[in-house]
Image (cartoon, rainbow, N blue to C red):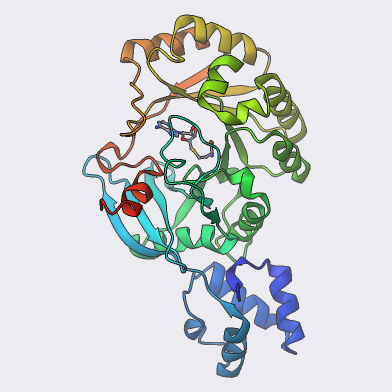
Length: 344
Ligand code: SAH
């Protein structure tokens, strides 16, 4: 059985024409799945019962059922714990900005990357999400909140570039004019730095934003906190980012989570600035979120401002990320872990 909402338009067209059906049927079904986000074949009211039954024999629609929902009292951020068809759990967060609603989606059930500060890795890696499952997070949230999501960030549980093909398929489907029609410019992929895949992504020349979870100014600190750095060193990663910027014409962003006494000194800021010099880069400084098992201590406000000032003085664009949903464990990975341990 395949989830039919993971097929591209072209693949769906082939399936429908092999069943001896006219082309417009594929468009109708694609629209039901990707624009309306239906969760059952029965909702496709303009498709004949015979065809719906035929499709049911080989296909199902992957869904995200709301298991838990938390609404922030501070800023209306909503966090979902979704249950997948096979009983696994993932998380998504909806944030309201002036320009619209943004969803932070998960790309895998768990994560293999092992970053020491991150909760997603703690409950272990289970499997990749299908393209349909990544998209179902949008449809479930839109339906529940009665909103239209305009922006997507792939910053939930998982490493998107470790699930490359399904993520790319998802991008094309949400971008499709018969689907959610979300512009590539409104989509951000966040990666811990899977360099070979950055080159693969570059070849597709998409107008999305690539953001790199850098979190360290040198290999020593980065290898201590992010195992991926043992495979691809910072120089190799930044070389790929420079090429990515030149090829796609898009500015590359860097995320830098500030952890007290680990990566937040003036010296660290100067070293980061020198590494990023000459690049069309933007640094997003993030105060580390508490994760119970991790014991990372947030940098002081003073240290964060000092870090930003040093970057700015060196000509590097740097902002401090506004924290949303701090009262609802909004940073990803925490709910799945608690659920698996029976704590929620
Ligand atoms: N695997 C991808 C996307 C998921 S993580 C990546 O590494 O980019 C999304 C972002 O949250 C990453 O920048 C990650 O490093 C950051 N993050 C993880 N745990 C965090 C924590 N405890 N506090 C602050 N940011 C964290």
